[in-house]
Image 1 (tube, rainbow, N blue to C red):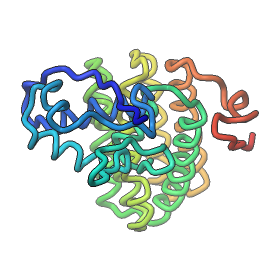
Image 2 (spheres, rainbow, N blue to C red):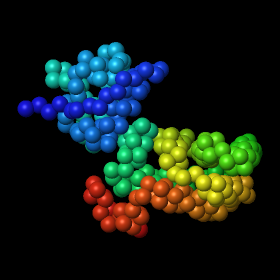
Image 3 (cartoon, helix red, strand yellow):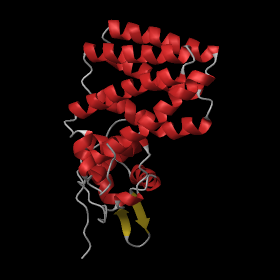
Image 4 (spheres, helix red, strand yellow):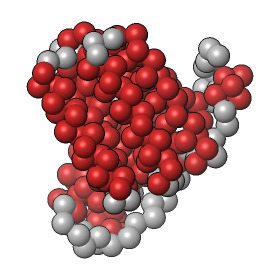
Length: 262
């Protein structure tokens, strides 16, 4: 007997309707509310539940297929794919897995990948940065200081992300920049999930200043060490705010059987 997923659909009236449908279905699929291996309701039924046209539903399903979450089987409907088929570097998938907090080991993998990329970037940037890169980083620091002074956390987080993107650009390695690109949105979202107190913003700013000083001095070892301190501070903050176990606890045995080095 075919199992058809039960979808919680709410009428959508905002612009870019298909994107709103994508967000809602993606959330339910990644969270497990719609299990893998189940069939989605038909296009007419989804259109009725969301209060949109079948064209909107068709476009949303196309995007979910591209992300690997749904497969369309002609003659048998639309089916939710198992996690092994998902595009885990898609920013929306990354963020929803982080937000749903179903698998602590997944956050550890994201943070581990981020650390590898960021530390390597800081080291290379200290050697390869140009005067233009330094000027841009210095300008961003000035704007970040102003955001901290104004307690404008949203602006600060946006500048934070841009600061790291400039460092990636300063490496001169296009593949390194592309490898980090999918993480940018989820890291921005991760920052938004943390408690952005004035003390945390000040501590984060100090970390960026230390990174800049080392890169400006052309000291790759100091840049790497400054970036490591900064990244680990972010890791501890997001783990604490999401009430996730420590890395050591997760390292014993992760939900998918992976083991992490201490």
